[in-house]
Image (cartoon, rainbow, N blue to C red; front, side, top):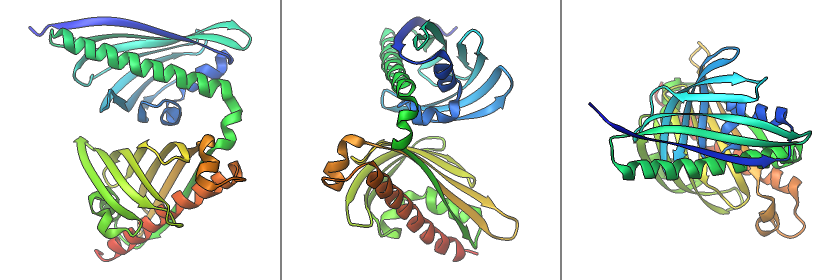
Length: 315
């Protein structure tokens, strides 16, 4: 019989925001990649009124982990409970709750509870899990506090946009071009060096050196989650200095006429502390937003232009 070691933790933080604002941030998993640093991608498997199943990809102590969780949402009690269905080793079990306790009209205490078991009976494995849970819990609560307290003040620092192109070719061929990023240094003029590692089913670590239109070099690293022939989502874990967040998605949809509609979506947050260092004295948020829109969109459209040629040649 397999034995497990178990433990429980509790973390909390005081946030100057309404309980409703905090509950919405916790409940809306679609925005977690933009709110919580460890979260790479979250989507719904099932969704009901108060019960849901979600898939989560997240970094845990430098590793990318994936699991499916059931959540119970209780807006009246200001509580969200969660339990992993199939934990990712070395976790044998994991569950917990987000609990919001209002302490004033614009102040709340948020508690994040975890209970977990480690595979086997190795105390060091349990200590690793405790360290990882502690680090992620602190990062998530700090990020929740920041986003809740800033509220709409962050609206100008965030930008989300899409570019769409039509490709005379199959979705599989366009997908393959984006998925096989190990060839990009040979296929894309703006990529000067690339390293692609498969670290799990459909999970890649992509490191690149790229050039913007004005010749500025950037070194980035991203975690990519690949859903064959449909989409690739990613989150940058090593960012250029002008961004404090960058997530993205490639979507591939055949329209039934032999044409594939490909959409590149970006969400980025301007790192306001670095605007003048990157863009020069006198530059402000409008200039930073415009620069990122042109740089990110320009590189994506350049990639899609070459992907279009690649797919068309394979018809």
